[in-house]
Each structure stands twice: as C-alpha cells, then as structure tokens.
Length: 75
Image 1: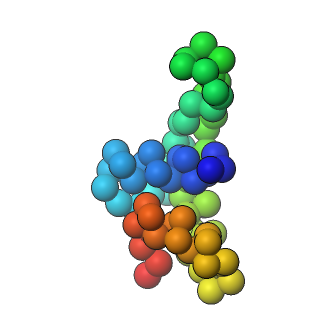
Image 2: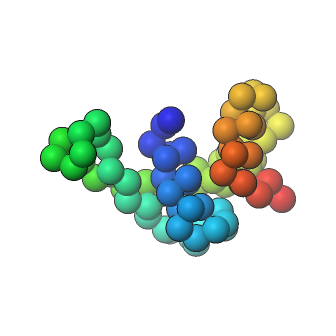
C-alpha cells in the first residue's frame, strides 16, 4: 500500500469519511519496525483524494477496488 493509500485509510478509520478538509495534512508512520525504525511522513491528503476522484474513470479495476475498500465517495 502506498503512503497516500495508508494516509487515506488512516483518515477514514478515524473520521468515518473521506471528505478531507482543505489543506489538511495527515501524518503517518513509515517503516517496518514496531516504532524505532519508523519515521513520520506528512501528506497533503485532500489533494490526493481530489486527484483520485477526478481520475476515477481511468483507474484500473484493481485500483477502484482498493479505493472502494476504504469507502471513497466519488461524487
């Protein structure tokens, strides 16, 4: 799962939707260890979600399935 997907999933699990506020920055832990090797990344999630929505018609079925799994609203 890419960092943006991880951030979107984290936001959705916390907020229950993907109506990301403008200029919202989502912080995610990136790494493989249980804390010590991880680093924190910040992502401009609103721009990514908007980009996914605008490209919905050209996304692969696999990509659509991934996004549907976290309940992205396409309208």
